[in-house]
Figure (tube, rainbow, N blue to C red):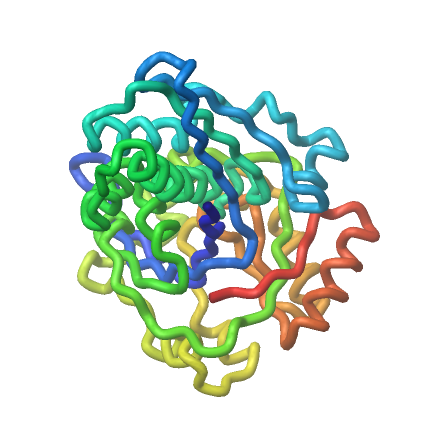
Length: 314
């Protein structure tokens, strides 16, 4: 089963709430870079036991990181620290258990801690794969609503990874409303040699706002622009017009934590692309005029040692 990595073409963040979370208005858009998870029943394992293995997809962003030494498969937990394992456990428990165990295998394409929801995509794919396995082994069906509830309990990005396409996320980002997508948008994904913790980026955002270096929007002002939704649905627009609609409130704190991202954004602008940090970063998305331009830009970036792949959004 596959589930897509995502980018946020719009991510407005409200003030920190009493519970430590933030209300957001987000436009999630799926990429064609996907995580894949297979689930295999093993009667020789103890009841409910989950064994997890991980591989890297050749020539993916993760593979490029691995070849330069900035990524090690040992970074990926294979126990309950992995969202995919917890997702499979939740499905099995919700179905009343299994007499044997499950072997999960994850094929990674989406950078770890890169702002593209790779762990959430693993969880979403694991939910689908385990639901199918439980049905085959026991004959018990898991309702779609139950699977989505499991997804919601695992994190704000997991429900979107279950649905794909494009959606507006509100609340903490998990309340989703699907939106129309016309022709796919062309872009380049650029991975970093480092990683950024999402909680650390949000904490830095709060600090910058408390210091007066960034403004704090009113909660009732959080909304995805209609012009951006119209463009995504297929209304003809130029890259310059799209640029005026994009927003990521986490970009400034991401650059604060990883200063080299600032010059890289400028270099991508000079190359004729429309770049932004994806989610909490440090992965970047650079929109291009068409897929040929995306392929050329990705190769140019790889020629100078960057980790890049062309992609399509939506």
